[in-house]
Amino acid sequence: MNLACATCPVKETAACSVLSEQERDALAAAGRTRMLKRGEMLFAAGDEDAACATLVTGALKVSAIDADGNEQILSLVHPSGFVGELFAPFAHHDVVALTESKLCTFGRRDIERALDEYPALARALLRRSQEDLLATRCLLELTANASAEARLAALLHDFAAAASTSSCHLAEEFELPLTRGEIANMLGLTIETVSRKLGELEELGAIRRKGKRGIELVDPAQLQAISGRIGD
Image 1 (cartoon, rainbow, N blue to C red):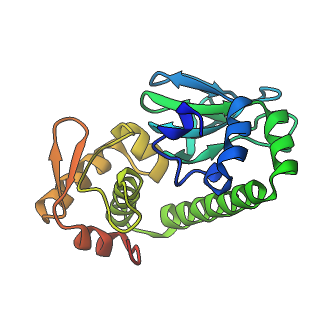
Image 2: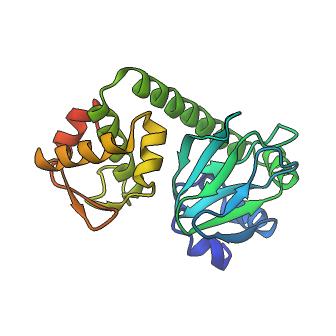
């Protein structure tokens, strides 16, 4: 592998992990590394030929703006996640960095060519698309039916899973990638409710808040039970 791939922290979990060393080198030659600051946009709704990317570090949000100018956060992208609308003439949503983020970016034509050359990569991206669709449906179900406490606990559970270096357990500590206002936006709650429910989860002994955005999981099993998540 080339140097960038050899030191990539998501080389075992990104879609490109299904490629051989030689195939990954060939794909990497067509890409480039891009750094985004918090609030910087990867691409906007309406952009033509928007780049595709694998998130290496950081966090992204996928959002839409309604007719009144209000933002709706549709999904989050965590490290090893893939973003890009391969078969659309233009991007349908904004993709914005929530924290300083590092990405491996490719032109759409380069990715389409790679999908033709490497069927394993096409299958890996199809699986990820299905997983993203399921996650979106779960979020819709959560915001429609679950209590405010369960919504917040489920989101914290997912943040801890995304921050973990292992698929077997949750991260013990992590930084919230969203502000309380953004959490409220995503879960269909008010900022006041988010703040109150964070305090209640801390009083219950499920979490401990550390500084402005730090979260420590004190009792992961309790958080999981509140969230309704099955398994870690």
